[in-house]
Image 1 (cartoon, rainbow, N blue to C red):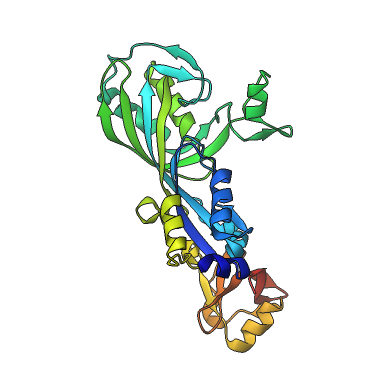
Image 2 (image 1 turned 45 degrees about the horizontal axis):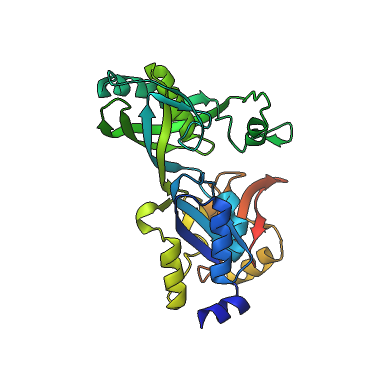
Amino acid sequence: MLFCAIASFPVDGFLNLNKPFGLTSHDCVAKVRRLLHQKKVGHGGTLDPAATGVLPIALGKATRLLQYLPHTKAYRATVRFGVTTTTDDLEGEVLQEQAASDLTLGAIQELLPQFQGTIAQIPPAFSAIQVQGKRLYERARAGEPVEVPARTVEIFSIAVLDWRPGECPEVDLAIACGSGTYIRAIARDLGKAAGTGATLAALCRTESSGFTLDTSLTLEELESQIQAESFHPLPLDTPLTSLPSVNLSFSDSQKWLKGQRLFLPPTELTLPIGAPLRIYDSSQKLLGIGKHIYARGASLLTPALVLG
């Protein structure tokens, strides 16, 4: 059975998991560990318990590659106007409610450009950011005054998907952004700009680090595949295609795997200095991550992460 094989031979690769509502990212990692009988499991980007959607899961050797995953993400978010909460989503206590039936879709569309591009954003008070060694949500739950530092985030695009008017109107937004962006903060700030207040009513991550929702697996589907012995993790280099690659000969592969620096082939001299590179052997096996450095008048390829 596959369970026995997995117990003896850990699985290496990625899993594109569709995180369900109500579970933390850590909960999902724990469930995958139990299903695969494997300890070395990690995730590539936290989702709040109330959020659903793409959660990249790294298995075995892939956990060492998480730091090299692209940081782009995309979401489908529902913003409810006329309501503000302590957590900037429906999980928190309601701070204020007011009728917002006069709010129009046109007014919202006029506000959206100020949330696109490189912007300063104040994360929610209930977030995992550490300030002076303590998580913000710990301070907030303890009733301590929370001064949240602003951070710079990048919003590549934000567009309306649907609009539902009413006493507490809702808008569905498609948001593409960089890492560190809080969609809850966008909902909160959009409500402020509209003059009605707002909170995040629902959130689904549709893309993360190159993984998309339409190719994701639920935990139930994963379990079924494992029981049917049909589960195959995605290859180690699946989310790394944006990184330039270098192919090594057999002899250079052996030297590189031992941690030795190599002279960069003349055909590769245009590769960016200091940027991570995918390193392959002559059979197209991923050996790890290298870097192009310039030292003592020569372009060299140095190992940054050797998978073995």
